[in-house]
Length: 321
Image 1 (cartoon, one colour):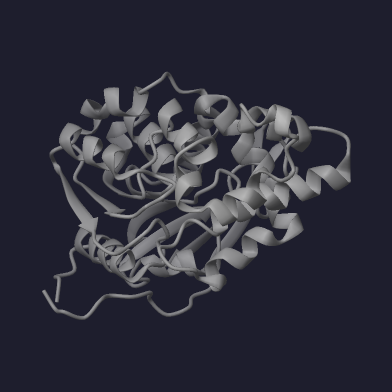
Image 2 (cartoon, helix red, strand yellow; image 1 turned 90 degrees about the vertical axis):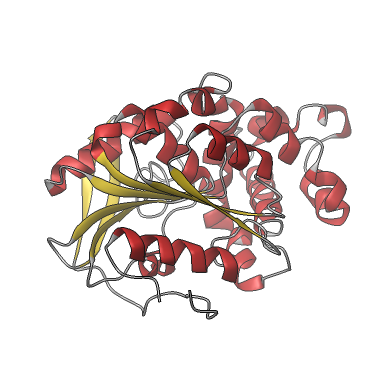
């Protein structure tokens, strides 16, 4: 293996885009990049509520892949914006299947990071026969302990300065359950308070996902329009535990046993504690496990990005150089 770290493929525009009516009043925006008829793949973004970005297209060799990226319900270019109606993990799993059928793919590589890893695991455990390979990064299994670590007590100890800004919109008497307190504001009628809370919720994530401050990554989280969908949808999912049974994704990891895969996780990932990625590694021995030292959570961190691109190259039959 070369000592040089792999990085993004060159900028690329979609060769096809569209809106798919998935029912329940929702239409999801999708785009297709790479080479039509090449190896099929689907990219699942984080959040929930994060939407896709042009950089994410660049995780795949465009000559070897035919990649679908899409904005999950209620975010990005999907409509209605910031909607919580008919917006659950299982709606999204069904949407992924609709996209696969629309493209006529029998199987595809599934790629997801952070919340995208949660969704990738839920989809792959539901439809294992449709997954040729699975690449997951920043593993989040959405247990109560993981949620409380990030939104109640844990990461708060590492970032007291940023935590102070996160709890500021919440009255002191309601800080015993911050997710529930945020939900009240984010689903309330006071638009000014809603916007203030959305920016605080979203910025907390943007400022804790990289090992070192990285304004290029974190700044978008503070934009009011982006933050509204991100905070409302993420909070909605997390208050409901992702509509998953406690511990379900690790419990059902045996369903992945025949799927080749790659797990990539940063040692100092604050939102998603390493122990859950380690547990997934133990429960799914067929997958390669790459623990990245000196890295946090974001896929843009050099060591993480290197491993992700080596994984997509490998599954397209490209030799590691």
